[in-house]
Image 1 (cartoon, helix red, strand yellow):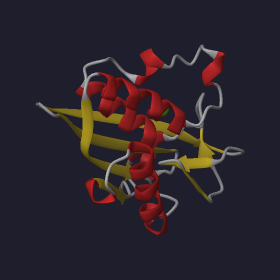
Image 2 (spheres, rainbow, N blue to C red; image 1 turned 30 degrees about the vertical axis):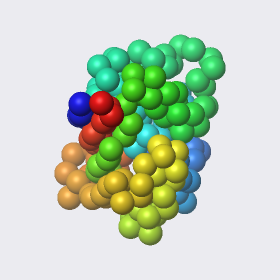
Image 3 (spheres, rainbow, N blue to C red; image 1 turned 180 degrees about the vertical axis):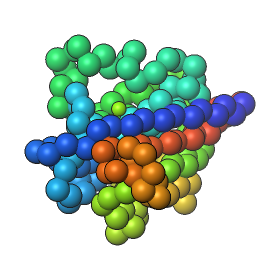
Image 4 (tube, helix red, strand yellow; image 1 turned 60 degrees about the vertical axis):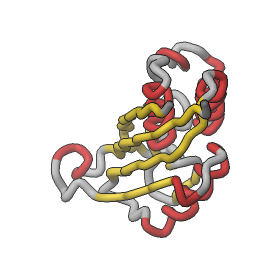
Length: 159
Ligand code: MG
């Protein structure tokens, strides 16, 4: 049995915040605003996984009114979501993602992000896709007001 899930997330770029993407700290003049560490890529992956097991979304599971999630590393949220996936008897087969950021240039960090996700998710690095692109200067993302991510996952149950 295989199931597929998609996820999307967007966060606003603001001053005086660190920038985390895929659990990797990226040096930049701004960071993403959010209740947790605002790791937009990990949030999109969490939603893709939750979608694949039809268990709602990240906002339902980790409400931003709950102080235990304030400032939390999103990798911890991902581990919790993976626990739900495993509890249902599924393993992650592969994962593909797209990061949309006008700045900073993510090419130097893509490999590290893949390695980090592969480690957290216990998925072979060859099965973790990380793509980065700009929004060609168009709209909010093009004006560097935020960063958005898409994620797709395939999960598999051994029968
Ligand atoms: Mg988010």
